Image (cartoon, rainbow, N blue to C red; front, side):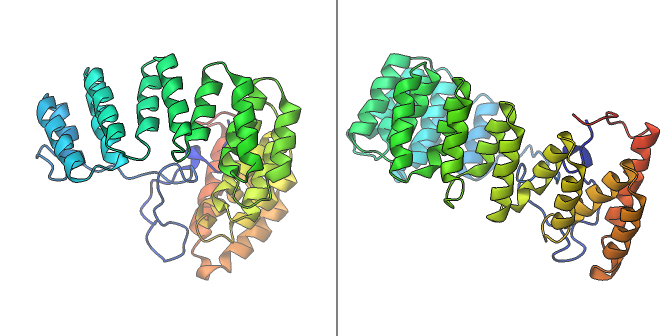
Length: 333
């Protein structure tokens, strides 16, 4: 597959910190799919911080010490995250009953969210009926996100109709965080038109997680809807989607739109280095010589020509692609 902005164009160079705002600043893995992450060296010394130390202890077969450390943390700070850490550690090391007991102790102690934690643990273990009861108990106690969690559980366990009803009620009440779940449920049950209708009714609400909605449409053969979603997300400031939108447009044969998206991305502080590289590559591959020359001149006028190295690098990759020596597939998806 020909990737114009994506993991096949990851930069492994040394210029990522040369200039503030150059587009080479480090980002968290998975944000845009454009930059590689840095892997910390492995140390053989015992870590100091609790979570790292517990993991190290487990890796070295000292599970009891790790559990004791986690239990001490829970005793000092009985927060939901610490409880989940302890319970998961127990479950992952063959001590499932102890994990359940920790959640039940937290429930008895009035820890908010503990019922949902127990439900999630039971669900992961395949104890579906018990998990369903625990999720319903969390809803009855009005725990945070309990209704959405119950609906997701019901959808996973074959109760689509009840799950849909809960999701629709939440969306109607203004909880747009569950829109991706509802769209996915509808698409997976063969109701793509309903999924599209839900998406279109709320996509400009401002608080809808648009990227996962777009992914659902891509996965279910609705590229035009996905493109519309990604454009809405970009308009709302989701610039990390420039690359995905460009790739999807190109896959649909919409070359002029692809080029324009990449041009727009060259003006974005976070994306512009990768966008210049992708644009150079695309214009070479598609034989758009006049546009290539025009874009080269425009690039030379930005930041004293700083991004020409990226544009030229993309062009070089494009030429290797045409020669069949770049190591990528010859045609896009």
